[in-house]
Image 1 (spheres, rainbow, N blue to C red):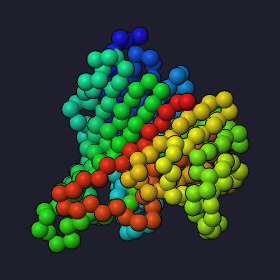
Image 2: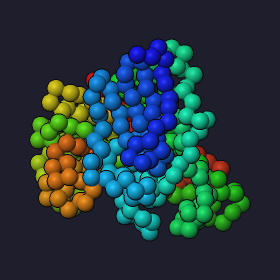
Image 3: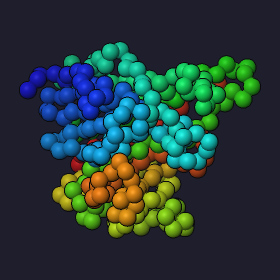
Length: 293
């Protein structure tokens, strides 16, 4: 086993990717398409769900891992569903160099950038630079999205408005035995039944589950049998989304196997209802952190 973290290029399912590997064996795999985290292995276990039914054509959105939804959440606007960032090629910063923290052999990161280009301007008249930083330490993965508004300050309509999410698909052994804690008492919108209420202390999953919560300042705890994962997000994300398609809806998703729903749960750091506003020359930063507990 290496004494220091390693960063390397590889091809996965025909996609250009970069892998970070720590001496402890933890790894993360990031595709240039969408700056998409495809895999996070920690303590010998894959922590993210990646659908085996993906098209892998380099253009279609990838089901699973951590899609970056930007600059639109779902279909709440005029852009393609969940925006365009997850479908486009991002560029690697600094040749995917391993971070300086690797001097102690226990950390690595990679940064990727998407900026205004003819393809984005064709559907969104906004000057921007989006950056994604994927940081790996033993037992922990932190994903940080930074949005810069590069419009000229004297331009008309120079503010940048966006919604979005880090649409994280967590791997579970059995959704029927999975519990999520930490949202108890938080305002909740059940998108399936279209009703508002307050979250239960413990969330269980039986059938289609699609709910938006006012984010908690406290970490969430995902219990999957004997495995536990702590989920945190920055206060700059207003909401948390919890989603599982259930058996019936899963059967309608062409990029999911019939029983894929039983092996995943999305817990997302999100901005759903009210757009974030970034003034010309301004910057917004939001992150999600996953910790094996």
